[in-house]
Image (tube, rainbow, N blue to C red):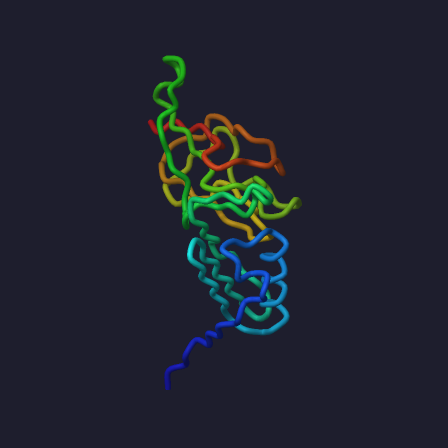
Length: 178
């Protein structure tokens, strides 16, 4: 006998039925999902969509997707369309750096080099990496998103300090792909 995944759709609070939600409303929705015991809540409006999935009462990371209009009152809530890995582009720097690839942040949030303060960093300068390797975590609205490399190579420089805020498309790492 096959088991079905239980999915429950919840009605959004009245404040959330406006065209956008602010950070407090999103946090309140996450708390509601954790307390209610449902496995998934999906809220879709004209210009944004949010999906919150839980596993045994704990909310897990799910991308928050917003349409192009940015909420200026809560910039942390304005995340790009779902992105699972950062974009890589060549860094237009001096001739020494022309072959380096810049790995950029796919979202707004807080940059962490390790999963917990007690654990070692995911990568350090000089480490060899392969495409798909977790490089860091970016926390956005209490959701921890693992950022994976799209390129193989060697980490040349970490451009952001641990526990620092990062912006969308901000350079995080320089990688030598050779």
